[in-house]
Amino acid sequence: MDLSGLERGLSVSPTEGAPGRFGASFPEGYRQGRGVYGGMVLGALARAAIASEPDPERRVRAFLGAIVAPVPDGDVDVTASVVRRGSAVTTVDVGMSRGEGALARATVVLGRARGHDGRFALEPPAIPDVTSLASLTLGPPFAPEFLQHFELWSTGPSPFSGSEPRTEGFVRSRAPLASLGAAEIIALVDCFWPALFSREAGPRPMATVTFDAQVFYPEGPVDPGAPLYFRARVLAAADGYFAEARELWTPGGELVALNQQTFAVI
Image (cartoon, rainbow, N blue to C red; front, side, top):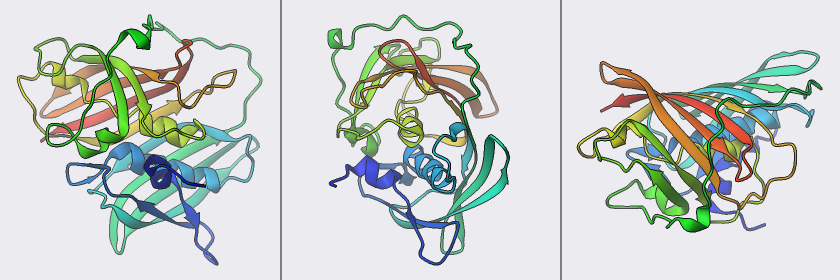
């Protein structure tokens, strides 16, 4: 199977004779600053946690990750350790390294559906028709190189416009995805620029420090090639750090991810 660059980066392979150990390899062209963009790194950690759970009905429900150093493209090592496997929920600690250097880590909670029939989301957005919007072509030298592999449609505010610190629009991988699972959702929610950009006067580097996500699975099938609606806002900022809340929605209005990130302004 000919995998796209994103799918290759999200893939992990078990290390023969070493339970809980995996290999991953990040393709060139997906950097943001000095390292591979965070959504790909963290999505690979989610994939390792999924591979550590034999019950396919236990899906990723919550993900708490941190990138502790710039992640180079090329080969990395991933380790996964099951903290506890209960009757319906499994908790897995996952780490990524190269040689002796730690790169990223996460705690992932996987759980079965509980059979509760309550399904709702507060303040769902009014999702516009993506065909009425012009897609953006982004990439070097004015945007991180990884963005050349994604399509974005912005509904505002524009970066560096002096507006309130929020961002909305659509996102999709340019290369078709075979499926839309937890790893892909984590990768896609990290594609848009930080919402603080709309308040800034001009570009400046910002980096994710922590990444907390909850994944929700739509009731019916979702076309993995359909653009997902993205919404984000800055919750608070102080001392060169800010907390941003992000969301991903299907075109039909079903929530698929909540994501809070702590950013450092460099």
